[in-house]
Amino acid sequence: MAAAAPPPPPTPAPEPSMNLLEPTRLDLPIFSRVRLATAEDVPHIHKMIHQMAVFEKLTHLFSATESSLTTTLFNSPPFTSFTVFLLEVSPNPFTTATAAAFPPIERVIHLDLPLVDPERETFFSDKANDITVAGFVLFFPNYSTFLAKPGFYVEDLFVRDCYRRKGFGKMLLSAVAKQAVKMGYGRVEWVVLDWNVNAINFYEEMGAKIHDEWRICRLTGRTIL
Amino acid sequence: MAAAAPPPPPTPAPEPSMNLLEPTRLDLPIFSRVRLATAEDVPHIHKMIHQMAVFEKLTHLFSATESSLTTTLFNSPPFTSFTVFLLEVSPNPFTTATAAAFPPIERVIHLDLPLVDPERETFFSDKANDITVAGFVLFFPNYSTFLAKPGFYVEDLFVRDCYRRKGFGKMLLSAVAKQAVKMGYGRVEWVVLDWNVNAINFYEEMGAKIHDEWRICRLTGRTIL
Image (tube, one colour):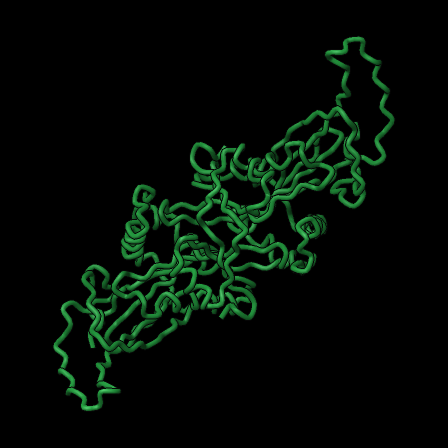
């Protein structure tokens, strides 16, 4: 049951199946939800951004602090500017309420192997209810002049290591897409590294089009003027 | 003087110079300024977006109307969301005031050939003062989680045909960069088509870095869910 817990709780060993074509499997549900993040979530968001920098070997570019995140995020109503959706998981169904501006999207996934989260304690968002932060997506409105419509741009999509390859990335990205549709927006856009074939395949399977012909230009620091 | 006027006003023919190394040149000043656009500028902005679609051979993607632009732009204080800077030109110095939120950036350029604007009448923003709209830039805040800082993303940069190759594109982009610095923002970003070598050279000369390794992904229309 405690899919996100280290060490996994004692689970009764399944009876060995006599049917070799269809062996008995464990059924370990993980209750997951996507909810709107608030300023209280900054410590967890900060840790995940750092993990993302480590993963991308870009820690030399990482200068965010909890304080600078708090100053720059959550200053506007959700969806009008920089917005964060948090992915939470729990071995138990969710009972606690969250921000009214966005009814959380819930899903139960079923694992056949116990999931060990070595950083469970660090990422508890609600210890009493055994709720752990497992990922986030940060997005904000962009604009298409041809459509005269806003869209959403996804700056970061991150799922913590032990929760990957379970559909959570898609759940986060879909949550943004659903919100875009709800608001009558025309597009959801993001960027991917050209060598990241796995990610490109994943996005294409979701129905995204990769626009090969565009290049990002950036003025930064001393070159900005 | 009327650099933006068709037909050019009678200009006294310069005396032929006897100094062949340094021939006498005309000096035709164009007074130009970058100012914050308002809802009243929508008809001109709409026409320029259409011209951009024609230039890019993308009119099949163009569905913006004056009404849809009015509904989606100018709903927030400048710089907090979608923001438009307008480029205006005049044969005379500017005397009229504009929005207090952004003191206009002015510049005088000097031409040695008269400039004929075949659409001058269509693009008058202030006929009494002979002020014509010559271009625009649309931008909005984006966010870097590594820096925990907003930046600006430039969606469109457009200078009307007869005003190109005179430094106005740079003037518009610099205005955005200056505003970014003023607000303590970390970056200005935009995209360019990979085959548009002239544009890429222009941006690199301005100090921009082209990030070759990123690709744009887009979910749109029916694929968005």
